[in-house]
Amino acid sequence: MRLAELILILAICQFRETGIPSELGRATGIVPPSIGLLPDLTSLQLGGTASLSGSLPSEWSSLSSLASLELTGSGAEGPLPPSWSLLTSLTSFQATGNSNLDGPMPSEWSSLTSLVTMDLSDNTLSGALPPSWSSLSVLQELDLSSNSLTGPLPSSWESLTQLLTFNVSHNGLAGNLPPSWSALIRITELDVSYNGLIGNLPAPWSTLTDLVLLNASHNYFTNNLPPSWSGLDQIRDLDLSSNLLSGPLPPPWSSLTALVNVNMSHNALASSLPTSWASLTNMEVLDLSHNRLTSILPDSWSSLPALAAIDLSDNSFNGGIPASWSVLGQLADVDLSHNDISGMPPPTWSSLYALTRLDLSHNDLSGSLPDEWRSLGLIVDLNVAHNSFSGPIPSSWNSLRKLTDIDMSFNGLTGTLPSAWSAMYRLENMLVANNALTGGIPVSWRYSTTDAPGNCILRDDPLWTWYCAPT
Image 1: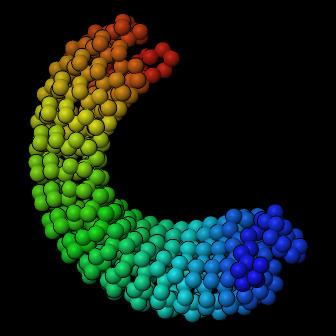
Image 2 (image 1 turned 120 degrees about the vertical axis):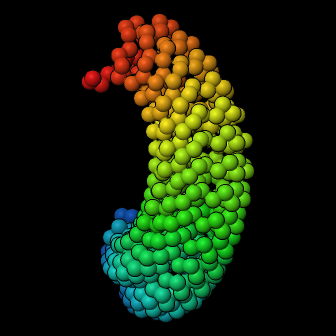
Image 3 (image 1 turned 45 degrees about the horizontal axis):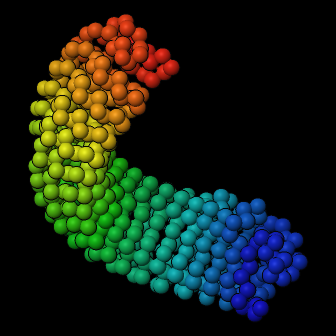
């Protein structure tokens, strides 16, 4: 076997099978610095040998032919050697999942101009991102996530124009998103989430037209969403949640027709829902919860055929629930809770056959619970608590055989608990406190026949008894 073709894998049995010298097979800690005496070595894999320890040898800087180096889960310790700047043939470096691999990212590595892929995620690296790495002109994949990096995103990295994916999430970075990064026109995935970044979302980033995924969640971004981002026409996954963003939802974003997953929850966005967003026909998941959005829910959104989950909870929406949304045949999860929605729930929503979870709690809905909803055969969790519903609990809902949790508390429901619900054998939690129900628990339910007090919760315990809060 030619030495230049040798791939070292640090597992003793494999060393013996491939004829690695016994000196290496007996090695404890990290592979000896003497590995640096193999100048023709092109690939070195030490991944998965987490029992190793010791610092990365600076002597390996003499591996002038090394193209691929993997240290994933190797147990490597200490800093990244600045002397490895001499590994100018290196195209792939992976050293993820080493909890004791710490220290700064060497600015000297700016000489590794052959690097295409570098993964240093899940370590304890610290310090700033080196501006000098702007010279890594062929770098395509860079993952620095889950470390302890600080400081700003270097504006100079605008020169990394071959970059396709960049992940620096779960660090302690600060400062602004560099407008100059608008030059990274090939980038497809960008994740800067869970940092301390501030300022505006850069309008010039509208040039990143190959971007498919952008995650900037859990930072401190402020001000408005850039209307110019309507040019990001390839984006599928957009997460801007848990920031301090304000202002309206931009109507021009109706051009982002490739969007599939959108999360802008936990901000301070304040406007109505743009009717023009009805053009986002590929959108499957939309979370706008915990904002300051107002006005009515648009009928035009009935043209979102792929929509499977929508969360508009904790806003200030008013008006009624759109009956027109009954055509959204993929809709499985709906949360409209904690708003000011009023009127009667639409009986036509009985056609939402894919629905598994519906939360309408903490609104001002009134009227009867729709008997027609008996056809929601896949629903598991239904919450209509804290409204103004009246009339009886529909006996016909006994057809909801998959229902496990239902909360009808704090309404004005009357009548008795329906005996027909004895067929709902999967029901685990039923809350009916603070209504005007009368009578006892039906004998057919096989529970106690004593009257249900006025502030009780029915829970699935061995006796199916009522648990009552103090009055």
